[in-house]
Length: 338
Image (cartoon, rainbow, N blue to C red; front, top):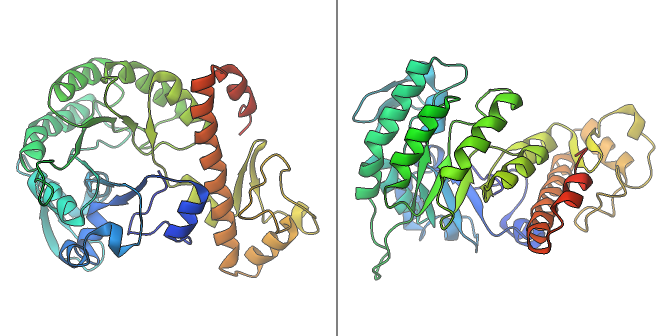
């Protein structure tokens, strides 16, 4: 899922995402509730109409953003009191309020409000985050509302926590998957821990998630990390990397990341990588793209973003094809240096 935190994937429009073949995007409850506000979005008929997006939308609950405001929030069993990063105004986010906001946004998949422990943290901190996540889980489900005029309830995903501790992950997965969530996520991964600690957590936790529901690894987006997680049984991903790295001169290719602002591209004709050429940007030489960044022209980040999103769209499509056709080993080899 491309990340459209504030109702927009930075530098591109909904028509660009449709052209690239994306069918699901992510937005954020915390940010949209503060600006422009859930009431306003609901008045426009929901986030789909507000941002003119025809496909499904998943929203993060806001838990991760609140976690990142460590100096501006206080967590209790009832919820999280925090101050807005925009104007310092005080707010109180509960599981019920998070689900309510996501319902107002009219999204297709809502994430349960959880407590995401940072890395590094003590075992006691990870255990307390898990305890509160479990305490809030039934409250998230109880707050679901029916879609207008139907018997269909708001779809909510539960989140497994537990830090890097296998016994906590096992306990959390057992608790969360025994509740009637519509999908399940592995949370608290890619919050600062090194890859050698991330991979074992994913490999250990993924098999505990039901195979008949979507399995989502939150916030993970390096190509190699995605391939590893898919091999463990994960279905869904989101990450800001494709767009954030694009705004910092970085293009993803099959031969690794390329810094387009580097001097080597100053007079380079053609693409950065002949094996990573996409219709949305194939007409532009690498030298021109470098010039745009050097001149601080907005078109530079936009073209780089289109390139990176096209790269990730192709990666996910090739993953699906490799699973269907039984060609996983050759796919792993193809992306070995990505």
